[in-house]
Image 1 (cartoon, rainbow, N blue to C red):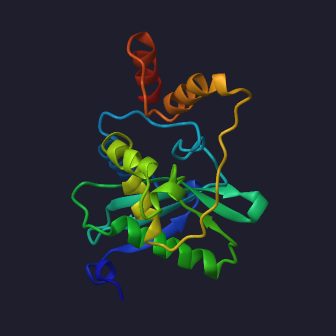
Image 2 (image 1 turned 180 degrees about the vertical axis):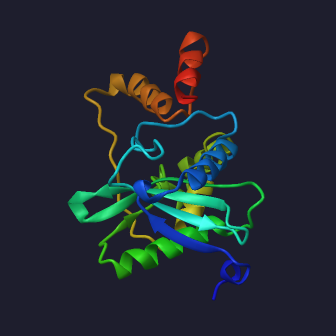
Length: 206
């Protein structure tokens, strides 16, 4: 039995249709608290909308008092007969290790239900961050204060995953600055000032 189980936490993995309205309110509250002033992201994780897709799964961490302290949202990955982690959030007053507890319980559930694969977060430049040294690695570590690259990489390493490369494609080298900016903006890592930012904030509040 884990520390969180001893503390009275339990995990349920359900479809959106099976979530009660009371639990939905708890989930919305956790999500809003976790995001704070940050907008929702919607590029690589394009199925983050809560309760919008019938074929997603939600892993709920119930606190001892029956409220929801955190959750994971998983979207189907038909090509590998698995699921991909779309979002993970927890309340500020929940104990450390809750997200790890949720992921481990989800992996155990996947094994019991013959799910072939659970894909974790996309960790940008993880191959370079895992290197022992290097100028590019040193630069990435400095950027961690802005983009949390190393923190995300360190979190993923806890689960001993199989690392797979992802590729960013562009036609010409001269396209790289514009394409890179578009990618960062789509991931909400860079937000331009002016009416575009206000428009984005308005849309994510609905």
